[in-house]
Each structure stands twice: as C-alpha cells, then as structure tokens.
Image (cartoon, rainbow, N blue to C red; front, side):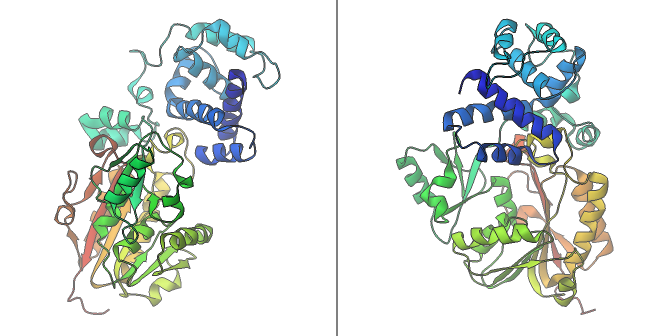
Length: 433
C-alpha cells in the first residue's frame, strides 16, 4: 500500500468509530477481517497510527477547535500528521490528492487548519490540564479527588500503550520453562513484576498463533487482573462462583489455582460471552467449570444456592477507568451506562451475590476502576448493611505494594491496568436465616 492508501484506511476506520457505539479495537478488527488483502506490514502501520489518534484524541481535538475546525476523522488524521511533524503542509496536500486509494482532496477549511498547525507540537503550555492528560470531563474532578498529587503521573501512564501480558496455566506448565522456550524462539519475554504467573511479551508478537497459546499453556491476561484472581485464593476442592464471568479470564485463573479439583460455576447475564468462554476452558484443559446464564443479578438460581459457595467473585461492571491505556477510546466516549447508572447496579449485584456465600466463605468484590464510588464506598456500604461480613485485609493475602485493607493497582505504580479488590469473609458461626 502507498502511504496515502494507509492514511485513507486510518480515516475509514476512524469514521466508523465516530459513527457507531462499538469498541475501537472491535471496529478495527472488523475492518481488517473484511480486507484480507492488506498485508501484515501495512496492517501494523495502519493500526499504529489509528491507535495513536485514539490515545491523543483530546489533544488533537483541542488543536482543531482552537483553530476553528470541526473534529472528524479527516481533521483528526490531518492534525496527527502535522503535529507529529511527519509531513509538512505541501506533503499533506499531496497525500490528500483524491487519486485512487488516496484521501479526497482537502477542503478550504482543512487547508487552513493544515497551515495553522504547521510548526506546532502536540502539547503547548496554553493547553488545559484536562485535555493535556487526555481525561474526559465527567471523570476529571473524580480523579483529581482520588489521585491528588499523583493525577499527572497516573494519567500519563494511561497514555502509553498497554503491554502484552500472559498468564501461565500452572496445571500445564511453569513460568520458568515457558520463559526459556519463548526466548529460544527469539521472542523478547520477561517475568512479570508482581504476579508469579505473569510473562510480559515485548514488541507484541502475534501470540495467538503460537503453539503455547493454542495448546492452552498461556492465556492473555493483564498482570493486574491476575493479581485479583490470586487474591481470591481459590483452593482445590472448593465450590466457587464467578458471578460476572464475562469472557472467562478470571474463571480460567481460578480453575488453575484449584488444580482442576472442586467446582466453578461461571455466571453472567451475557450468555453469548459464556458460550465463547467454553472454548477457552477446553483449551486450558479445565474440566471443573460449568456455565450458567442469568436473567438478572437476582436470578432464581441465586436464591436456590444460598450459602452454597466457599468463594463468590464479583468482578462488577464498571466505568473501566483503569483500562484506559488498553481501551483509549473510553477516554472520550461512553460505551454503555455511565457512572450514575453503574453505581446502583454494582450495589444490586453485590447485594444479591453475597447470599451464595456459605458461613466462613469469601466474597471478593473487584472492579477495573480507580473511582471510590465504585470501589471503597461500595464495600463500606455493604459492610454497614451486613455485619455478618468482615473485611480481610489484602496485605494479609498478597505481599505487594498497593495492598493494604484493599488491593489497589494503578498503571503508574504497578505498570498494570487499574484494579481494585476487596475480600469479605462471612462469619463462620452465623446462624442460618
């Protein structure tokens, strides 16, 4: 592909992202699936620029609006080309030639924008902090409150691309042997920093094509997510419920911790995701997992299984603030419910799921958010209403920085996605209701 054709592809993907309520990575994947003729090098170059625009949306938009432009796929791409000083105004005009496979010729406002941005950099002292740190308006005051002086460090850490982390499937292999094999294959692999099961792959190789992935020796899972599963400390022989299992990432980690002994019920209201998860369970060689589609958080199954499980994990739906480096489009558009809807939903979920915990059992509440309304305050509200539960300090279960009463992981401190988790233990002597 010519440079102009690559840039036109970026514009086409951006146009679709701005038009539909679908995650940016899903839109990009669909685009390439329908254009098999695009080679690997061209695909990599297109994705690199596309995701750069996703990560820099607020800053690019600020420059466009400051100069009287309208934010759309073309102006975002033009601003990206100019502000990164890859092309001058003349070269950009030549790219936007209207020739076959190239972007259409520039309009007069686009040419004016191009000239206005020449010589400028992506950031300037006049740019407001919120835009400079790529933070959406709704989250800015909330994050300032919780992060305080660490706001800039944390938001800057979220502006970098997420690494590719793997979780070693301990029932099939050890981390040391897989690290050695990956390195023999010429891959840049290193042990994770906090999870004993994590391997971090540099340069993002196509791991889904590797025999270790195909044979279930490793799974793609952020190191922070691995720590949430380790905090839960699922043991062989236990009865475990993964209440919001989704695609099954933490379910897999729990199953491996149990060494395939005992029983896990993976539950979710999204039954299609559970169906897709079954292939992951099979590939990992886990036979102690069953799935259960729920009609809602108060499905009759919950009542029928009151006080039945040793461990109930509630990985609650949340704003996903902690995943911004992995899903940069979440910084500037809301896909799904906002925080005002999510907070009462989270409360409803935990208020139903706790019923399944047996006396002496654990309820683990987790999110991939950094916001107290979704985290500490949910736990505090629950404990105030349910004195039969007590908080088990995370620092007694995992020995890492960020573990106190709760497990709190952040991109700047731990180089993981942002995660929160709390372990709540039901009193052993509680009388049956």
